[in-house]
Length: 174
Image (cartoon, helix red, strand yellow):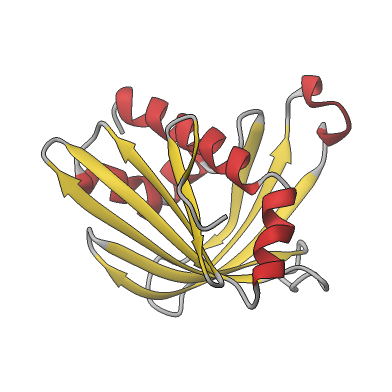
């Protein structure tokens, strides 16, 4: 999948063991960055449409922890309704308002990594382009097979879905 592919407003491609996702937002760089750095704002849009995120722990600083739970609240999503998906992230580097580097793992409610699920090393870059912001996520995996695993789980569709939610939040003002 090394060629650029498109899903709605999302551009994605692979470079070896990295999955690159890019999306343009009609908002200033500071506003898009703030949506990632403020716990309540992040809860308002993180996760696919129909899902609600709750931050159990949110320490936005180097070596800080972000432990969160996404719950499917949409009865129309069939077998996913009521399902929980926990994540555990550790921030490695934060450069306001340009970059956030962190690891993210599928986890349980105690923050323990789920066996058989990949840990993802993510670099989120926020690039101002006039009144818009280009967000680039570079997600590094242990292997190309791990990329395929998350793509088959609906990673691309879920990411675009949550970015539509972020678009709405930015349009309505933070």
